[in-house]
Length: 146
Image 1 (cartoon, one colour):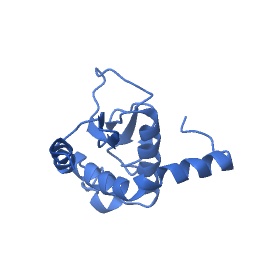
Image 2 (cartoon, rainbow, N blue to C red):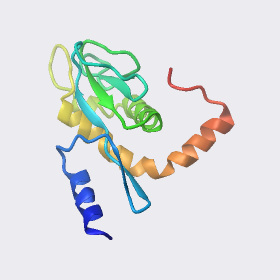
Image 3 (cartoon, rainbow, N blue to C red):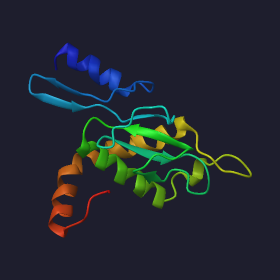
Image 4 (tube, rainbow, N blue to C red):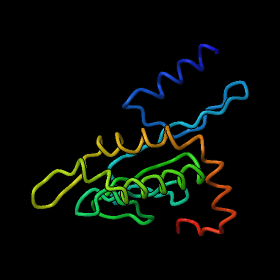
């Protein structure tokens, strides 16, 4: 393994890295992690590579295609990864994974760090089977996220 590739893998595991780019070294393509940040209405939007995660209320953790006031913006590096992370977050929401980390007695909310901690480990287990998922959805005729 080249030393530069080893450095990138270490940076990939670092918890505060928010890179959303493809890195290609000697024919090996690595997908960098999803960038999750707080949404501000003044931000420029890229609907092909971004989706939004609700951060407050009983539906905290629910992904959405349009911006919401109390949400996080998740930015992937391409549309394929955006769709993967969107449906992964949707599955985690339906499995009530975000309910475990809800805070607040009147209005429940989810912390951004806890949102990252829930989504990133799920992607490591399911990302290798992305091609199989795409083949299945194509064969079943499943409609896209919009």
